[in-house]
Amino acid sequence: MEAHELTARAIRDRVAAGELTAEAATRACLERIAAVEGKLHAFVSVDAEGALRRAREIDAALARGEAPGPLCGVPIALKDNICTAGTRTTCASRILANYVPPYNATVVERVLAAGAVVIGKTNLDEFAMGSSTENSAFGPTRNPWDLGRVPGGSSGGSAAAVAAGEAVMALGSDTGGSIRQPASFCGVVGLKPTYGRVSRYGLVAFASSLDQIGPIARDVADAALLLGVIAPHDPRDSTSAPAPVPDYLGRLEADVRGRRVGLPREFFIEGMDPEVEAAVRGAVEVLARQGAEIIEVSLPHNRIDARDGQLSAYSVAAYYLIATAEASSNLARYDGAHYGHRTQDDVGMIEMFARSRQEGFGPEVKRRIILGTYALSSGYYDAYYLKASKVRSLIKRDFDEAFKAVDAIACPTSPTAAFRIGERADDPLRMYMGDVFTISANLAGIPGIAVPCGFTADGLPIGLQLLAKPFDELALLQLARAFERATAHHRRRPPL
Ligand code: GLN
Image (tube, rainbow, N blue to C red; front, side, top):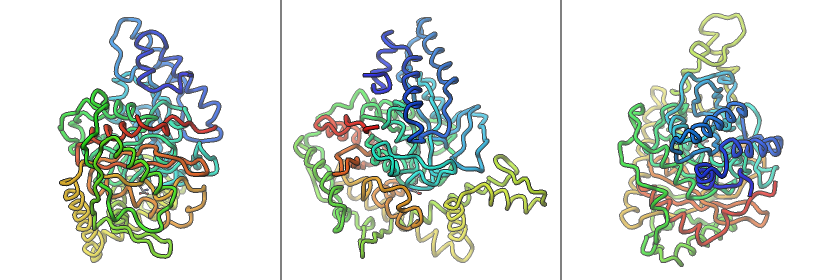
């Protein structure tokens, strides 16, 4: 097996034992990037020289007898909305095309302190707004399983890079599904932590009450390892929780006998994609065979309706009001004056603001700023934003109730497997409805994991989603690992 195909644990162990160098592991990923990146476009930028320099520093430190960190020598990719000091952080937007942050996000400090090598910054939907990575100002990323299809989004570059072996693991961000859905489309593991579990310091804000950073990896144990590195409390983010960090990796292999897994009645709807339904139900049976107790639960305010092939749900409506409202406020800072793109036109100050934004933002970002500004405007606030906030409370209450009876909830990650590039690009509503299984977790603030659970007849990956109560990422990881132990889906690699 070549170094880029190894797990992060194997790389770390071999580097620590002197059987592999950090430099060789980094070169393996860089060679893989050289071989497949032309097809995939998973990265916005690759810093080969910087990565190799860093890898040699790690090798030198080990040679001096310094203790290896938990990610020693592991090549990692970072979504390009996570700030890296001295390296461009673009959010896949023209408005930040040349933005070089003066500081590292806390998660970047943490993975560096753990010994990881940052190999590059991955592509995303502009400002993480989208579900396909087609909204990137720098062009779409392609799905490694089928180059005619999207990798999902918005962390599509991170998921594609990990699936294709361009990086061993990656960080993504998830506001409404952006870690879990691309993980599911690319056949890898993605975990959205509880709101407050991971510091958002240095994550470019999209919707601050929903955003979380989390791991994308090729197996559950690597996801557990990376979560443990980034989870400790950060005083620089006031929403970062001082909750103790369990030994996710050390406690991963658990007996799941007697664990109660809920199937939400409202999620298994008529007209569901039969291949997705079969794979998810099959996965639940695998858990049942290991002794998990399967219980039907009800999430009435998370009900999904299907009429004439068109889905609808309160959760999606509430999310697209709350997320756009917060985005309209967060994105007000891109005015051509503080940082980022400024119009070259010789105009007055007010016109300069308007033209810089007109030139810098893409169509989906503009749509959301307009929607969010409208939802917050005087006279409409109560009808839209306030109402959406009330729906959000009801959605959260559903989960509070359900988790009195179960330890986790199982459902699909996405209603379909990866769709074709361009298929939904002109139909925002259809694109938004694809988030119907992931959005509730962000509104409720609870953790969720996506794990590969099967393939369509066309060979596209399908993802099982598990949800748990706040700060019970350990339960998610243990159940996901129990499923993985009994199956081989996660070992299949795309035929690139
Ligand atoms: N697809 C959702 C959106 O477009 C979620 C994006 C995300 O999680 N960043 O808003």
